[in-house]
Each structure stands twice: as C-alpha cells, then as structure tokens.
Length: 377
Image 1: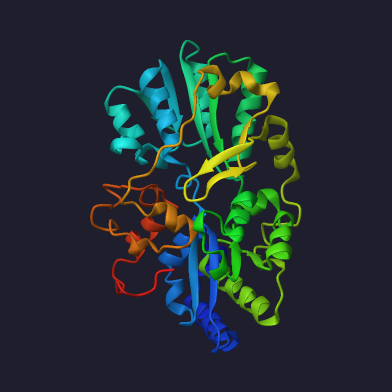
Image 2: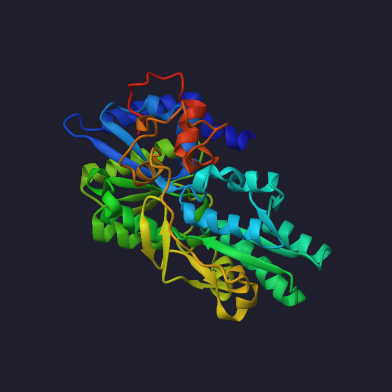
C-alpha cells in the first residue's frame, strides 16, 4: 500500500495544483475529456476538480463499458434469458441496467430466468464444465481490457470441445470511440475539447501507438494516465503544456504500466479468436463502423448470436434520461432532470447511474455535498 499511497499524497497534490495554476494561461480556457470511467471516479472521489484552476474543466467521456451498451443489447440478452432454456452469466454491473419498460436482468431472475452473477469469464466456463446438460451463455462486455480473458475461455472451450458453452459478444474498441468523439458525431462536443486523458488499463493492452492518428489528424493531444489522483493531475499538467506550446502529441504519464506497443501476447490472442463487426451501436455515439468484435469463423460454434438465432434491433432509451448526452460530453450528470431524484443508484433510470464506472454514479456518490450550481465537468 505504500507504493499506492505515494500517488495519493495530499501535499504533493497541492504542489502539483500550484504548478498547474502557474502554467495555465489566464486569458484562455482549457477543456479535457477523461475518456475512461475509472478516471471519472478517481477525479470525483479525491476531489481533483477542486484543485484545478477555474478556467480548466474536465469533460466525461464514453469509457464506461456498461454505459455504452445500448438498450437493444440489454433487451437481446433479456430475451435470451427469459425465452430460452439457458443459463446466462453476467458481470455484476450488468444485472441492474434498465432495458425497455424498466426491465433488467435482475428482474428477469426474479421472474425465474436463470441469470448468474460471475466475477470472471472463467467462472462461466467452469459452470459449463460442471453441468454439461445445461446451455451456458456468457454475456461478454467491456473494452480491450476484458477482451483477452474472453478470448482465453473461448479457446479453452474449443480445446475441451464444450458443446454447451457460448458467448454473446459485446466487446467494444476504444480507438473508434475516440475518433467518433473527435469527429463530433451524434452532436458531440468535439469543438469544446482541447485534449484527451487516455485510458490506463486499455492502454496496457493496446499500447500508446493507436492514439497517434487522433493527435495528428484532429490536433488533439492525448496523455495516457494512471488511475490515481496524482496520475490524473500530472496528465492534466502535461496536456496544458501541449496546448500552451501548440503541440498535439501522444504522451504517456503511466509509464510504469503502459508501453508503446502494449501487450503483444494479449493482442495476438484477441486477433486469433475475434474479428471486427461491420458496425455496432453505442449508447450516445450511434452506429460506429468496425468498433466492436464478434467471434471469428474458426470459433463460430461458440457464438451465442448464431447458436440461438438472435437478431438485434435498436431500442430508444428512456426519454427523460440524459445518459447518451453525458457519454458524448455535451451534458453534465447534474444537468439531467432525473439525476438524484427519480434516478439514483437504488432506482437507476439510466446505465450511467448503475455502473461502477458511470459518471452519474460517480457524482452521486462523491459530489452530492457540492454546490448544485457548480460546474461538474
């Protein structure tokens, strides 16, 4: 814990804040998007925004894997759980994400569906091994961080010849989402963003190289940052320096874990088991080409969509929920009229209030005591 605590030192944070205030130019404003929900929670939990100059603001991005899953994908797995004799294995956050009419996997389980919460993809595989007469479907979600474990269990299922195991694959990719934000698609606030705080865990897998095209093409600097508060503050300082100097480069604050090329073994595993979908719907960003994965043809026998003949249809979110706009960076969590009243972690209306990485959940948990009129992003 001593090593972790060094990145949470209050005195060092105040020193960094003083240095940041000296470097920020008083006659201009700065706006940086923290792509990852893990950064949003670190910023909220440790009060990083309270240490920033008034003319520097942070904007929340779409880097929450549960949040970006559109309602249609939740409805798809709900129909599978309710209408077919299968066991659906899901991560905990996914259980309470609302679908059409307020239905959720948790409610489906109360209605008799066999829905199990698991802690890892290997748990789903182990269940299929223990109960060969049961069809077990793993609802696989997440960015590049959680994709290699799914690839590993699919390859192991193939090795074992498990006929009762399959994967409903909803793994999505970070670079296409950053591109969509930078291009300003779906009414996004690209023109307001001066740079990106790049994700930490994702970057340990893919490295820093994939971000270079965004910095060059859109003139938006990217700084990869760790999840501790001092990591975030140092990354903000590095972004400020780039903006002040007119640079737009990829820099790596998280050098203790992230390299230029990332984890080549994990990348090779992903390339073996998965292939790109032509298009995939994201909450807040719409249909993005080549932004998600499906199982490669060599492993198609473990594809739940093919095995059970599942179709996909887009379904609109609750009309009062602003989660989609929050994910695009054009609305603050507190600006949603449902925030903290109708929509709470106990009674979530949108996915951003459910997930442990959601912006709404972060500000509900750590920001309720602040001035309601204060800037949130």
